[in-house]
Length: 467
Image (tube, rainbow, N blue to C red; front, side):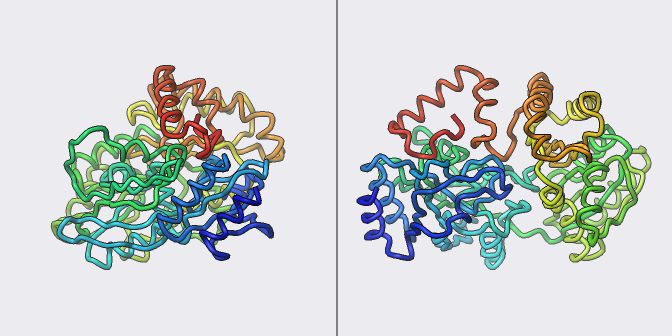
């Protein structure tokens, strides 16, 4: 290993290689569920340096764990405990290479923090719509490697739909220069889509060209109280009918989720009283502020008339709108403060969600009285974060050890029966690797393994993740 470390130091300099000392910031995940021991941390500052790192690791047969902001939730970007895996941090590659206003596109390096990409687009008078709770620390490369979703998938799609081109370094250190700004390019296999969502197992994304959109003239945000998930789904249908593409956000929060926020983060104001379900809606209108407000008020009036909504609060200014979103985005933080829990990032047809929630809530309560289901997520695109916390009398670590496997089986069986997915936007990583092996179509798994063998025959890129 000393020869590898010497080669890396020669290529990257002292600032580019961390070996020895406290590496815990790179060795432990955000949830503090996975922790390992890295051989070292390589911090290249350019694509050429990434290529050099991968060529050296390929020559020395050393595994590489690519890492962006290390905000993932499935253990996909932290090393194992062998002390033989190199963490490849893209954190120094944070340059916005260019913005093409006429083409409505932006090219940025993988280490750019998502909020900085949003700000760069806004500075050019345009919108980069990918938005999620970790946007102040997650990075563009990680967003693409996990095909991140977030709060505006309903209108703009996942990271995959927002990407036009990629620059990728292969396992052997070759560079694919695919930073195309084209929206049409029908010249063979779509390599871009191959690397997006591959969680660093097929190649290392070093830069990307992303789509931009016009800034909306008006954004209107509201909270609405519903008595059932059926009512929340009915409100979604009404919002689609009345607002069309102007509907950019439709989030749902259970009473238990907001009660948890009230307990753990009591400083956050909750405008509505307790309700079985609270929906957060956002409309973004490019036509005019007057048109947006007319549509929004008409939508809520119709929802009250049909009984889908029992109470509502419309944000009167940008500060209030941000406070509404902050309430929704604080649920994961409240859960983290409350202790480890069983996380489910599931996707279902929207029509199947009410039945799933009713059945599963009852099944879990019968299985373990006192259990707490913290259910929230992106109802507009069928993605629920159906998380389960221990009863108050049971320690979180004991709860996970004894009950995670049977609870996962119950939840994933019900999801699979309804044509859903065990991972909507968080990825597979280590957390769901075994579940994927048991539940994915065998032909699909065989094709995935064939692709992995073809692109990484020595299994050096993020081994033991996904497959």
